[in-house]
Length: 162
Image 1: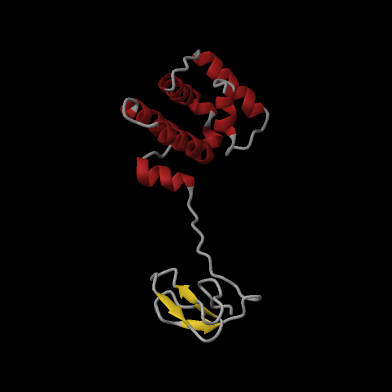
Image 2: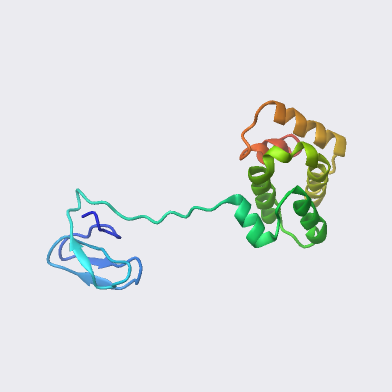
């Protein structure tokens, strides 16, 4: 039972292997139990089994570096300047959110870059704002000890009214 890699299928029920998408039917309750063998199954009890669920664990800093070649706020700023005419909104939001998660502690020495990033972003979504207002709001939110994962969303909520 501890080896199940799929749900436990009732006897005489067709089960589908989640890795190979092949199906099997057995005369006993069964689960697929081997990621490398498409026919391997184990007996199980549908009331008591553990399923193996893979976990995707990634680090925001690694994603920024590997996909966008962004290693700090300056790189983020340069990326926005270079691609501001072709980048889509979801990508911008992902990069900004991951940047806050990755470079949160260095915001003070990079406030000019961050302010410019938000200025570019807000202009792209047709919302012009004063750079000083953006900078003031960043400092204000930082004083409130906002969670770095929520920082971008809360900052935007001050400039974009839905």
